Length: 521
Image (cartoon, rainbow, N blue to C red):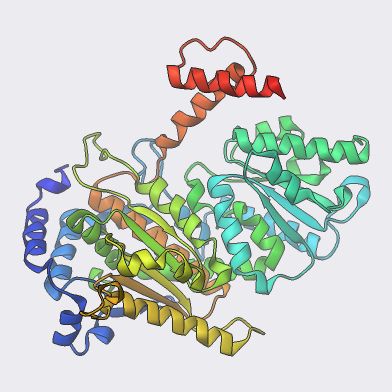
Protein backbone atom coordinates (compact mmCIF):
# COMPACT_ATOMS: atom_id res chain seq x y z
CA UNK A 1 0.00 0.00 0.00
CA UNK A 2 1.37 3.41 -1.00
CA UNK A 3 1.68 5.76 1.94
CA UNK A 4 -0.87 8.55 2.01
CA UNK A 5 1.69 11.33 1.90
CA UNK A 6 3.29 9.81 -1.22
CA UNK A 7 0.09 9.95 -3.29
CA UNK A 8 -0.27 12.48 -6.11
CA UNK A 9 -3.66 13.55 -4.71
CA UNK A 10 -1.97 14.43 -1.41
CA UNK A 11 0.60 16.65 -3.09
CA UNK A 12 -2.09 18.42 -5.11
CA UNK A 13 -4.10 19.10 -1.93
CA UNK A 14 -1.01 20.48 -0.20
CA UNK A 15 -0.42 22.92 -3.05
CA UNK A 16 -4.10 23.84 -3.13
CA UNK A 17 -4.08 24.61 0.59
CA UNK A 18 -1.17 27.01 0.20
CA UNK A 19 -3.19 28.94 -2.38
CA UNK A 20 -6.42 29.29 -0.38
CA UNK A 21 -5.14 29.30 3.22
CA UNK A 22 -5.62 33.05 3.56
CA UNK A 23 -9.28 33.03 2.46
CA UNK A 24 -11.71 34.19 5.11
CA UNK A 25 -15.18 32.73 5.53
CA UNK A 26 -16.56 36.25 5.07
CA UNK A 27 -15.05 36.33 1.58
CA UNK A 28 -16.31 32.85 0.70
CA UNK A 29 -19.88 33.73 1.68
CA UNK A 30 -19.72 37.09 -0.08
CA UNK A 31 -18.62 35.38 -3.30
CA UNK A 32 -21.27 32.64 -3.06
CA UNK A 33 -24.68 34.00 -2.02
CA UNK A 34 -26.18 30.49 -2.01
CA UNK A 35 -23.31 28.88 -0.10
CA UNK A 36 -25.34 28.24 3.07
CA UNK A 37 -27.98 26.26 1.20
CA UNK A 38 -25.63 24.62 -1.30
CA UNK A 39 -23.10 23.21 1.16
CA UNK A 40 -25.64 21.28 3.18
CA UNK A 41 -27.14 17.82 2.94
CA UNK A 42 -29.53 15.57 4.82
CA UNK A 43 -29.79 11.87 5.55
CA UNK A 44 -31.66 9.65 8.01
CA UNK A 45 -33.56 12.69 9.26
CA UNK A 46 -30.43 14.73 10.06
CA UNK A 47 -29.60 18.04 8.36
CA UNK A 48 -25.91 18.89 8.16
CA UNK A 49 -24.64 22.36 7.23
CA UNK A 50 -20.95 22.30 6.32
CA UNK A 51 -20.86 25.69 4.61
CA UNK A 52 -18.87 27.39 7.38
CA UNK A 53 -15.65 25.63 6.45
CA UNK A 54 -12.57 27.10 4.85
CA UNK A 55 -12.89 25.26 1.57
CA UNK A 56 -14.05 25.74 -1.98
CA UNK A 57 -15.71 23.50 -4.55
CA UNK A 58 -12.20 22.67 -5.76
CA UNK A 59 -11.19 21.66 -2.21
CA UNK A 60 -14.07 19.22 -1.98
CA UNK A 61 -13.31 17.81 -5.43
CA UNK A 62 -9.67 17.18 -4.48
CA UNK A 63 -10.58 15.64 -1.12
CA UNK A 64 -13.00 13.28 -2.85
CA UNK A 65 -10.28 12.34 -5.34
CA UNK A 66 -8.06 11.47 -2.38
CA UNK A 67 -10.80 9.25 -0.92
CA UNK A 68 -11.23 7.46 -4.21
CA UNK A 69 -7.49 7.03 -4.59
CA UNK A 70 -7.58 5.30 -1.18
CA UNK A 71 -10.37 3.01 -2.50
CA UNK A 72 -12.89 4.16 0.08
CA UNK A 73 -15.86 2.60 -1.71
CA UNK A 74 -14.15 -0.79 -1.87
CA UNK A 75 -13.28 -0.68 1.84
CA UNK A 76 -16.83 0.38 2.67
CA UNK A 77 -18.22 -2.56 0.71
CA UNK A 78 -15.78 -4.93 2.42
CA UNK A 79 -16.96 -3.77 5.85
CA UNK A 80 -20.63 -4.24 5.00
CA UNK A 81 -19.83 -7.67 3.52
CA UNK A 82 -18.30 -8.77 6.83
CA UNK A 83 -14.74 -9.23 5.56
CA UNK A 84 -11.86 -9.30 8.05
CA UNK A 85 -10.86 -5.64 7.74
CA UNK A 86 -9.54 -5.60 11.32
CA UNK A 87 -6.25 -6.87 10.00
CA UNK A 88 -4.16 -6.85 13.19
CA UNK A 89 -6.65 -9.14 14.96
CA UNK A 90 -7.87 -11.06 11.91
CA UNK A 91 -11.50 -10.08 12.54
CA UNK A 92 -14.38 -8.49 10.74
CA UNK A 93 -16.00 -5.30 12.03
CA UNK A 94 -19.68 -6.17 11.77
CA UNK A 95 -21.31 -3.69 14.14
CA UNK A 96 -23.68 -2.70 11.32
CA UNK A 97 -25.15 -6.23 11.57
CA UNK A 98 -26.37 -5.38 15.08
CA UNK A 99 -28.94 -2.98 13.65
CA UNK A 100 -29.73 -4.78 10.40
CA UNK A 101 -33.38 -5.31 9.49
CA UNK A 102 -32.44 -8.96 8.94
CA UNK A 103 -29.69 -9.54 11.50
CA UNK A 104 -27.60 -12.72 11.69
CA UNK A 105 -29.29 -15.52 13.58
CA UNK A 106 -27.13 -15.11 16.69
CA UNK A 107 -27.88 -11.38 16.83
CA UNK A 108 -31.61 -11.94 16.41
CA UNK A 109 -31.56 -14.55 19.17
CA UNK A 110 -29.70 -12.22 21.53
CA UNK A 111 -32.13 -9.37 20.84
CA UNK A 112 -35.05 -11.71 21.54
CA UNK A 113 -33.49 -12.66 24.87
CA UNK A 114 -32.98 -8.98 25.68
CA UNK A 115 -36.64 -8.30 24.95
CA UNK A 116 -37.79 -11.19 27.14
CA UNK A 117 -35.62 -9.99 30.03
CA UNK A 118 -36.67 -6.36 29.70
CA UNK A 119 -40.36 -7.20 29.30
CA UNK A 120 -40.23 -9.38 32.41
CA UNK A 121 -38.69 -6.51 34.36
CA UNK A 122 -41.30 -4.03 33.16
CA UNK A 123 -44.11 -6.43 34.06
CA UNK A 124 -42.62 -6.86 37.53
CA UNK A 125 -41.70 -10.51 36.92
CA UNK A 126 -37.89 -10.28 36.94
CA UNK A 127 -36.95 -11.39 40.43
CA UNK A 128 -33.75 -11.82 42.36
CA UNK A 129 -32.79 -12.43 45.96
CA UNK A 130 -35.69 -13.55 48.13
CA UNK A 131 -38.04 -13.34 45.16
CA UNK A 132 -38.07 -9.53 45.16
CA UNK A 133 -38.77 -7.65 41.91
CA UNK A 134 -35.96 -5.65 40.31
CA UNK A 135 -36.36 -1.88 40.75
CA UNK A 136 -32.87 -0.59 39.92
CA UNK A 137 -30.19 -1.80 37.52
CA UNK A 138 -26.56 -0.78 38.06
CA UNK A 139 -24.34 -1.19 35.00
CA UNK A 140 -20.76 -2.15 35.80
CA UNK A 141 -18.59 -1.53 32.75
CA UNK A 142 -15.82 0.65 31.38
CA UNK A 143 -14.99 2.15 28.00
CA UNK A 144 -17.46 1.01 25.37
CA UNK A 145 -19.37 -1.02 27.96
CA UNK A 146 -20.18 2.23 29.75
CA UNK A 147 -19.92 5.28 27.50
CA UNK A 148 -22.48 4.30 24.86
CA UNK A 149 -25.19 3.03 27.23
CA UNK A 150 -24.60 5.98 29.58
CA UNK A 151 -24.90 8.48 26.71
CA UNK A 152 -28.07 6.98 25.25
CA UNK A 153 -29.80 6.46 28.60
CA UNK A 154 -29.20 10.08 29.55
CA UNK A 155 -30.07 11.40 26.09
CA UNK A 156 -33.40 9.55 26.02
CA UNK A 157 -34.40 10.00 29.65
CA UNK A 158 -37.60 11.77 28.61
CA UNK A 159 -38.79 8.36 27.38
CA UNK A 160 -38.02 6.46 30.58
CA UNK A 161 -40.89 4.20 31.53
CA UNK A 162 -40.24 4.64 35.25
CA UNK A 163 -40.35 0.94 36.01
CA UNK A 164 -36.62 0.22 36.29
CA UNK A 165 -34.14 2.91 37.32
CA UNK A 166 -30.61 2.77 35.86
CA UNK A 167 -27.27 3.81 37.31
CA UNK A 168 -23.73 3.49 35.94
CA UNK A 169 -20.41 2.64 37.57
CA UNK A 170 -17.16 2.70 35.63
CA UNK A 171 -14.33 3.93 37.84
CA UNK A 172 -12.38 1.47 39.97
CA UNK A 173 -12.28 4.23 42.60
CA UNK A 174 -14.63 2.88 45.32
CA UNK A 175 -16.32 6.27 45.52
CA UNK A 176 -18.00 5.65 42.15
CA UNK A 177 -19.71 2.44 43.27
CA UNK A 178 -20.49 3.84 46.72
CA UNK A 179 -22.28 6.83 45.18
CA UNK A 180 -24.29 4.60 42.82
CA UNK A 181 -25.41 2.31 45.65
CA UNK A 182 -26.41 5.11 47.98
CA UNK A 183 -30.06 4.74 48.95
CA UNK A 184 -30.67 1.50 47.03
CA UNK A 185 -32.45 -1.57 48.36
CA UNK A 186 -30.08 -4.55 47.96
CA UNK A 187 -32.93 -7.01 47.41
CA UNK A 188 -34.30 -5.06 44.43
CA UNK A 189 -30.98 -3.95 42.91
CA UNK A 190 -29.61 -5.88 39.91
CA UNK A 191 -26.12 -5.55 38.51
CA UNK A 192 -25.08 -5.91 34.87
CA UNK A 193 -21.45 -7.03 34.57
CA UNK A 194 -20.57 -5.82 31.08
CA UNK A 195 -17.18 -7.15 29.99
CA UNK A 196 -16.47 -8.69 26.62
CA UNK A 197 -13.61 -10.80 27.98
CA UNK A 198 -14.89 -11.09 31.55
CA UNK A 199 -11.34 -10.26 32.60
CA UNK A 200 -11.59 -6.44 32.69
CA UNK A 201 -9.90 -5.60 35.98
CA UNK A 202 -11.90 -2.47 36.84
CA UNK A 203 -15.27 -4.06 36.03
CA UNK A 204 -14.58 -7.30 37.90
CA UNK A 205 -13.33 -5.42 40.95
CA UNK A 206 -16.53 -3.38 41.01
CA UNK A 207 -18.53 -6.61 40.59
CA UNK A 208 -16.66 -8.16 43.51
CA UNK A 209 -17.46 -5.20 45.74
CA UNK A 210 -21.09 -5.15 44.56
CA UNK A 211 -21.41 -8.80 45.53
CA UNK A 212 -19.88 -8.03 48.95
CA UNK A 213 -22.38 -5.17 49.40
CA UNK A 214 -25.24 -7.57 48.77
CA UNK A 215 -23.76 -10.19 51.10
CA UNK A 216 -23.31 -7.70 53.95
CA UNK A 217 -26.88 -6.50 53.64
CA UNK A 218 -28.59 -9.85 53.06
CA UNK A 219 -26.49 -12.34 54.98
CA UNK A 220 -25.03 -14.06 51.92
CA UNK A 221 -28.08 -16.14 50.92
CA UNK A 222 -27.56 -19.00 48.44
CA UNK A 223 -29.39 -17.11 45.66
CA UNK A 224 -27.29 -13.96 46.07
CA UNK A 225 -26.04 -14.03 42.46
CA UNK A 226 -29.60 -14.10 41.14
CA UNK A 227 -29.21 -10.31 41.18
CA UNK A 228 -26.45 -10.40 38.54
CA UNK A 229 -26.65 -10.36 34.74
CA UNK A 230 -23.58 -10.68 32.53
CA UNK A 231 -23.01 -9.41 28.98
CA UNK A 232 -19.85 -11.07 27.74
CA UNK A 233 -18.11 -13.01 25.02
CA UNK A 234 -16.70 -15.36 27.67
CA UNK A 235 -19.74 -17.14 29.15
CA UNK A 236 -17.62 -19.85 30.77
CA UNK A 237 -15.89 -17.24 32.93
CA UNK A 238 -19.21 -15.64 33.84
CA UNK A 239 -20.63 -19.01 34.90
CA UNK A 240 -17.48 -19.74 36.89
CA UNK A 241 -17.98 -16.41 38.67
CA UNK A 242 -21.44 -17.65 39.65
CA UNK A 243 -23.85 -16.04 37.19
CA UNK A 244 -26.60 -18.37 35.96
CA UNK A 245 -26.52 -19.29 32.25
CA UNK A 246 -29.97 -17.83 31.63
CA UNK A 247 -28.70 -14.46 32.89
CA UNK A 248 -25.71 -14.34 30.49
CA UNK A 249 -26.15 -12.46 27.20
CA UNK A 250 -23.60 -12.63 24.36
CA UNK A 251 -21.26 -10.18 22.70
CA UNK A 252 -19.03 -11.27 19.82
CA UNK A 253 -15.39 -10.70 18.95
CA UNK A 254 -16.41 -8.96 15.73
CA UNK A 255 -17.96 -6.10 17.74
CA UNK A 256 -15.55 -3.54 19.14
CA UNK A 257 -16.50 -2.13 22.53
CA UNK A 258 -16.95 1.41 21.23
CA UNK A 259 -19.35 0.08 18.57
CA UNK A 260 -21.34 -2.19 20.90
CA UNK A 261 -24.24 -0.20 22.34
CA UNK A 262 -26.50 -1.70 19.64
CA UNK A 263 -25.98 -5.16 21.18
CA UNK A 264 -26.82 -6.52 24.63
CA UNK A 265 -24.29 -3.97 25.93
CA UNK A 266 -27.26 -1.62 25.41
CA UNK A 267 -29.31 -3.53 27.98
CA UNK A 268 -29.38 -0.57 30.43
CA UNK A 269 -30.90 1.57 27.67
CA UNK A 270 -33.62 -1.01 27.07
CA UNK A 271 -34.34 -1.33 30.81
CA UNK A 272 -34.84 2.43 30.95
CA UNK A 273 -36.90 3.09 27.79
CA UNK A 274 -38.13 -0.36 26.71
CA UNK A 275 -37.17 -2.58 23.78
CA UNK A 276 -39.50 -0.85 21.31
CA UNK A 277 -37.65 2.44 21.81
CA UNK A 278 -34.30 0.58 21.73
CA UNK A 279 -35.33 -0.83 18.35
CA UNK A 280 -36.08 2.70 17.12
CA UNK A 281 -32.54 3.65 18.14
CA UNK A 282 -31.28 0.79 15.98
CA UNK A 283 -33.61 1.91 13.17
CA UNK A 284 -32.01 5.36 13.12
CA UNK A 285 -28.53 3.86 12.91
CA UNK A 286 -29.67 1.54 10.13
CA UNK A 287 -31.01 4.49 8.13
CA UNK A 288 -27.59 6.16 8.35
CA UNK A 289 -25.93 2.84 7.44
CA UNK A 290 -28.01 2.72 4.27
CA UNK A 291 -27.12 6.30 3.40
CA UNK A 292 -23.42 5.65 3.92
CA UNK A 293 -23.56 2.43 1.92
CA UNK A 294 -25.42 3.82 -1.10
CA UNK A 295 -25.08 7.61 -1.36
CA UNK A 296 -22.55 9.01 -3.85
CA UNK A 297 -19.45 10.30 -2.10
CA UNK A 298 -20.28 13.87 -3.17
CA UNK A 299 -23.41 13.82 -0.96
CA UNK A 300 -22.32 11.18 1.54
CA UNK A 301 -22.40 12.79 4.98
CA UNK A 302 -19.92 10.54 6.84
CA UNK A 303 -17.49 10.88 3.92
CA UNK A 304 -17.78 14.66 3.72
CA UNK A 305 -17.36 15.19 7.46
CA UNK A 306 -14.38 12.81 7.56
CA UNK A 307 -12.61 14.57 4.70
CA UNK A 308 -13.25 18.01 6.18
CA UNK A 309 -11.63 16.88 9.44
CA UNK A 310 -8.65 15.54 7.51
CA UNK A 311 -8.41 18.87 5.67
CA UNK A 312 -7.94 20.75 8.92
CA UNK A 313 -5.76 18.24 10.76
CA UNK A 314 -3.37 17.40 7.94
CA UNK A 315 -3.26 20.61 5.92
CA UNK A 316 -3.96 23.38 8.47
CA UNK A 317 -2.38 21.74 11.53
CA UNK A 318 -5.50 21.77 13.72
CA UNK A 319 -4.91 19.45 16.66
CA UNK A 320 -8.34 19.35 18.27
CA UNK A 321 -12.05 19.55 17.52
CA UNK A 322 -14.74 20.82 19.89
CA UNK A 323 -18.08 19.00 20.11
CA UNK A 324 -20.81 21.35 21.32
CA UNK A 325 -24.22 19.69 21.80
CA UNK A 326 -26.91 22.27 22.48
CA UNK A 327 -28.95 19.83 24.54
CA UNK A 328 -28.22 19.09 28.18
CA UNK A 329 -29.31 15.50 27.64
CA UNK A 330 -26.44 15.12 25.13
CA UNK A 331 -23.84 16.19 27.66
CA UNK A 332 -22.19 12.75 27.45
CA UNK A 333 -21.67 13.03 23.68
CA UNK A 334 -18.15 14.56 23.91
CA UNK A 335 -16.71 11.77 26.14
CA UNK A 336 -18.45 9.13 24.01
CA UNK A 337 -16.81 10.59 20.89
CA UNK A 338 -13.47 10.84 22.64
CA UNK A 339 -13.35 7.06 22.81
CA UNK A 340 -14.90 6.48 19.40
CA UNK A 341 -12.49 8.76 17.58
CA UNK A 342 -9.29 8.71 19.60
CA UNK A 343 -9.29 5.00 20.43
CA UNK A 344 -10.17 4.14 16.83
CA UNK A 345 -7.80 6.45 14.99
CA UNK A 346 -5.19 7.46 17.56
CA UNK A 347 -2.55 5.46 15.67
CA UNK A 348 0.89 6.35 14.29
CA UNK A 349 1.44 3.36 11.99
CA UNK A 350 -0.57 2.19 9.01
CA UNK A 351 -1.94 -1.28 8.31
CA UNK A 352 1.48 -2.32 7.01
CA UNK A 353 3.23 -1.21 10.19
CA UNK A 354 4.87 1.89 8.68
CA UNK A 355 4.65 5.43 10.08
CA UNK A 356 1.57 7.17 8.67
CA UNK A 357 3.59 10.32 8.06
CA UNK A 358 0.83 12.79 8.92
CA UNK A 359 -1.49 13.67 11.80
CA UNK A 360 -4.30 11.23 12.54
CA UNK A 361 -7.08 11.58 15.12
CA UNK A 362 -7.44 15.03 16.71
CA UNK A 363 -8.11 15.57 20.39
CA UNK A 364 -11.90 15.64 20.85
CA UNK A 365 -13.32 17.77 23.63
CA UNK A 366 -16.35 19.89 24.44
CA UNK A 367 -19.34 20.41 26.69
CA UNK A 368 -23.07 20.83 26.47
CA UNK A 369 -24.97 23.92 25.50
CA UNK A 370 -24.46 27.41 26.76
CA UNK A 371 -22.17 26.26 29.58
CA UNK A 372 -19.16 26.39 27.30
CA UNK A 373 -19.98 29.95 26.25
CA UNK A 374 -19.09 31.06 29.77
CA UNK A 375 -15.94 28.93 29.89
CA UNK A 376 -13.86 27.96 26.85
CA UNK A 377 -15.66 29.84 24.05
CA UNK A 378 -13.42 32.81 24.86
CA UNK A 379 -10.54 30.77 23.43
CA UNK A 380 -12.57 29.84 20.37
CA UNK A 381 -13.47 33.46 19.62
CA UNK A 382 -10.26 35.30 20.49
CA UNK A 383 -7.58 32.68 21.14
CA UNK A 384 -4.70 31.66 18.90
CA UNK A 385 -5.72 28.09 18.05
CA UNK A 386 -7.62 26.78 15.05
CA UNK A 387 -10.39 24.62 16.53
CA UNK A 388 -13.07 23.28 14.16
CA UNK A 389 -16.36 22.82 16.01
CA UNK A 390 -19.39 20.53 15.73
CA UNK A 391 -22.67 22.13 16.82
CA UNK A 392 -25.34 19.50 17.51
CA UNK A 393 -28.79 21.07 17.74
CA UNK A 394 -32.25 19.48 18.21
CA UNK A 395 -34.69 21.66 16.24
CA UNK A 396 -37.66 20.83 18.46
CA UNK A 397 -37.92 20.77 22.22
CA UNK A 398 -38.57 17.48 23.99
CA UNK A 399 -42.19 16.74 24.86
CA UNK A 400 -43.25 18.84 27.82
CA UNK A 401 -40.19 21.10 27.69
CA UNK A 402 -40.40 24.90 27.79
CA UNK A 403 -40.48 25.96 24.13
CA UNK A 404 -39.39 29.52 24.78
CA UNK A 405 -36.33 28.28 26.66
CA UNK A 406 -35.58 25.89 23.81
CA UNK A 407 -35.76 28.75 21.27
CA UNK A 408 -33.22 30.64 23.37
CA UNK A 409 -30.98 27.57 23.39
CA UNK A 410 -31.16 27.18 19.61
CA UNK A 411 -30.59 30.91 19.11
CA UNK A 412 -27.38 30.61 21.11
CA UNK A 413 -26.16 27.71 18.99
CA UNK A 414 -26.80 29.53 15.72
CA UNK A 415 -25.30 32.75 17.05
CA UNK A 416 -22.12 31.04 18.20
CA UNK A 417 -21.64 29.30 14.86
CA UNK A 418 -22.08 32.58 12.96
CA UNK A 419 -19.90 34.61 15.33
CA UNK A 420 -17.08 32.07 15.11
CA UNK A 421 -17.25 32.14 11.32
CA UNK A 422 -17.61 35.83 10.59
CA UNK A 423 -16.26 37.62 13.66
CA UNK A 424 -16.55 41.37 14.13
CA UNK A 425 -14.10 44.13 13.29
CA UNK A 426 -13.28 46.65 16.04
CA UNK A 427 -10.18 48.47 14.72
CA UNK A 428 -10.17 51.02 17.53
CA UNK A 429 -10.50 48.41 20.30
CA UNK A 430 -8.36 45.31 19.68
CA UNK A 431 -9.65 43.60 22.81
CA UNK A 432 -13.13 43.78 21.25
CA UNK A 433 -11.97 42.52 17.86
CA UNK A 434 -13.19 39.08 16.75
CA UNK A 435 -11.14 37.67 13.87
CA UNK A 436 -13.67 34.99 12.96
CA UNK A 437 -12.71 32.37 10.36
CA UNK A 438 -13.18 29.64 12.99
CA UNK A 439 -14.86 26.77 11.08
CA UNK A 440 -17.82 24.70 12.22
CA UNK A 441 -20.33 22.05 11.19
CA UNK A 442 -23.95 22.31 12.31
CA UNK A 443 -25.82 19.02 12.73
CA UNK A 444 -29.55 19.55 13.19
CA UNK A 445 -31.70 16.78 14.64
CA UNK A 446 -35.46 17.10 14.17
CA UNK A 447 -35.75 16.29 17.88
CA UNK A 448 -33.79 14.27 20.42
CA UNK A 449 -35.51 10.92 20.01
CA UNK A 450 -34.23 7.34 19.52
CA UNK A 451 -34.21 7.47 15.71
CA UNK A 452 -32.30 10.75 15.54
CA UNK A 453 -29.81 9.67 18.20
CA UNK A 454 -29.17 6.38 16.40
CA UNK A 455 -28.57 8.21 13.13
CA UNK A 456 -26.23 10.71 14.82
CA UNK A 457 -24.07 8.04 16.44
CA UNK A 458 -23.88 5.99 13.23
CA UNK A 459 -22.89 9.16 11.36
CA UNK A 460 -19.89 9.54 13.64
CA UNK A 461 -19.06 5.82 13.50
CA UNK A 462 -18.87 5.88 9.72
CA UNK A 463 -16.97 9.16 9.71
CA UNK A 464 -14.27 7.50 11.84
CA UNK A 465 -14.18 4.54 9.43
CA UNK A 466 -13.68 6.83 6.41
CA UNK A 467 -10.81 8.61 8.13
CA UNK A 468 -9.14 5.30 8.96
CA UNK A 469 -9.35 4.24 5.31
CA UNK A 470 -7.84 7.50 4.08
CA UNK A 471 -5.04 7.42 6.63
CA UNK A 472 -4.48 3.72 5.89
CA UNK A 473 -4.83 2.69 9.54
CA UNK A 474 -6.88 0.01 11.29
CA UNK A 475 -9.69 1.78 13.15
CA UNK A 476 -10.84 -1.40 14.90
CA UNK A 477 -7.97 -2.38 17.18
CA UNK A 478 -6.76 -0.59 20.33
CA UNK A 479 -3.37 -1.98 21.27
CA UNK A 480 -2.46 1.29 22.95
CA UNK A 481 -4.89 0.48 25.74
CA UNK A 482 -3.00 -2.63 26.79
CA UNK A 483 0.42 -1.37 27.93
CA UNK A 484 -0.83 0.74 30.82
CA UNK A 485 -3.15 -2.04 31.98
CA UNK A 486 -0.30 -4.54 32.05
CA UNK A 487 1.96 -2.18 33.99
CA UNK A 488 -0.80 -1.37 36.49
CA UNK A 489 -1.24 -5.08 37.19
CA UNK A 490 2.49 -5.42 37.81
CA UNK A 491 2.52 -2.41 40.16
CA UNK A 492 -0.17 -3.69 42.54
CA UNK A 493 2.30 -5.98 44.40
CA UNK A 494 4.84 -3.14 44.65
CA UNK A 495 2.24 -0.89 46.29
CA UNK A 496 1.49 -3.73 48.72
CA UNK A 497 5.13 -3.79 49.80
CA UNK A 498 6.58 -6.56 47.66
CA UNK A 499 9.84 -6.16 45.76
CA UNK A 500 9.79 -3.45 43.10
CA UNK A 501 12.69 -4.57 40.91
CA UNK A 502 12.55 -3.40 37.32
CA UNK A 503 10.78 -0.12 38.05
CA UNK A 504 12.18 3.13 36.72
CA UNK A 505 13.51 5.58 39.31
CA UNK A 506 10.50 7.89 39.09
CA UNK A 507 7.92 5.13 39.55
CA UNK A 508 10.01 3.55 42.32
CA UNK A 509 10.15 6.88 44.19
CA UNK A 510 6.42 7.43 43.74
CA UNK A 511 5.66 3.96 45.10
CA UNK A 512 7.85 4.66 48.12
CA UNK A 513 6.20 8.03 48.73
CA UNK A 514 2.67 6.62 48.51
CA UNK A 515 3.51 3.66 50.76
CA UNK A 516 5.14 6.01 53.25
CA UNK A 517 2.09 8.25 53.31
CA UNK A 518 -0.14 5.25 53.95
CA UNK A 519 2.09 4.12 56.81
CA UNK A 520 1.92 7.57 58.37
CA UNK A 521 -1.87 7.34 58.40
